Image (cartoon, rainbow, N blue to C red; front, side, top):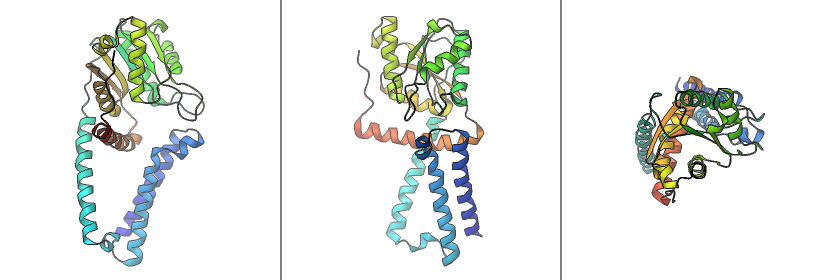
Length: 274
C-alpha cells in the first residue's frame, strides 16, 4: 500500500509540473529551465521509492548506513526549521492601507509570455497599482522590468501601457526597462527617481515608498530594499491563484533561504550610495 501511495504521489507531482508549464506558456528555453521542474524531480524520486519498496519489501532508507541516516536527518531538520521561520517572515510583510499616502510607488515586473503579453499575475499587480494611483494623484509611479531571458521585449513599457489604459496619466509613470532582477529593480528605480525629481538618491531612499508585487514576494522584496538603503518601504500585494499557491510559496521559501546565504557569505546586496 505504501509503495502505491508513493507512486501515486510521484505521478501527481509530475502532472503538477506539466500543468504549471501549460498554464504559463513561455519560450522553449523558458520551459526547459523552469523552476517548476522541481516537482518532476520530487515526483520521480517518490516513484523510485515506491518501485524500490515494491520490489524489495523494505524502504530505501534502510540500506543507508547509520551515520548517513543521522546526517540526513539532522540536515533535513535544519532545513525544515529554517523553512518554517522563512515562511513566517514571508507571510508577514509590512503592508500599507489603500487610504495611506506615499511619495513613490515602484511596480515590479513579473514576466511576459512568448507572445509579448503580460500574464495575469502581472496584470493583477497593474490593477492594484492603478487603484492606488487613482486615489493618490500626487504619487509618482515607476514601472520596472527589463528584457527577460530569451525574449527580445522589455516588459516595463507594456506595464505602463496597461496603467495608462486604466486611466493613469503617462506623465506620472516612469519607465525603467533595464532591470533583470529585484535588486536591479530597486537600484535603477532609485536612480530614475533621482534624475526625474532632481533629488539626491539619499532623499529618494528616505522617502515613503510602496512596492507592488505578488503578496508572497513582498517580504523578500522589502528585505532587499531595506538592505539597499530604503528606510520607509511598504507593500501592496496581490494574491496568486490557488492552483499555484504551493509552487509559489515553495519557490519563495527557497529564494528567501538563498538570500539569507547570500547576505551571510557575501554581504550583498550593498547599500545604494548617493
